[in-house]
Image (cartoon, rainbow, N blue to C red; front, side):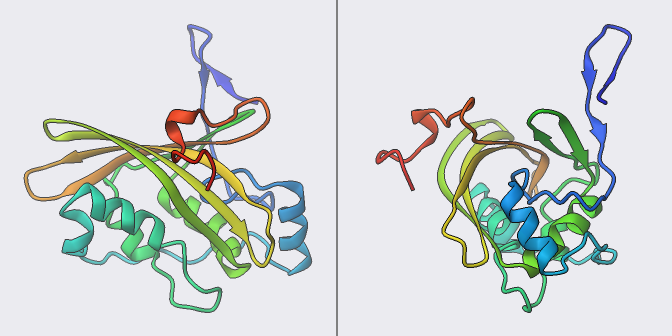
Length: 198
């Protein structure tokens, strides 16, 4: 159940790892969950994310930040992980918020722990459209994505809402919020490529 504050507003619940897996940017469909369970991909912690220096090409521009944002999860199932690189993109207080039937909240480590089994199962995600608004040293990015699991041809889409700031030295992502597309919430034309598809 989602908690409420004294004004009756719903508060997001802090996510705790469970066997109910979610992708990095969408709630898993039942078929994908079944695929993971059949492959023995339980929600096992990936280990603590190491602290490494940020790559200059990642953090010098919004373009670099968004390129890295997607590159880190598009690795081969048995290939080297890029969670440490991923962590360098975010402010120390980063939270990830999934909006759906409920509101779920993750720290970076919690999200890594739950996303790792999906990477092992062949998770792929790509950006298909981006809208950027900048004022001074703050920026907002609407990033429309599509995801696939393994060899499946089924495509899921959604929109990442990414807040960034520049501290005179580099860019940081301050928050990431996303919502997956469904029948009740189709992605609007202004957040899709001109063709309207992928």
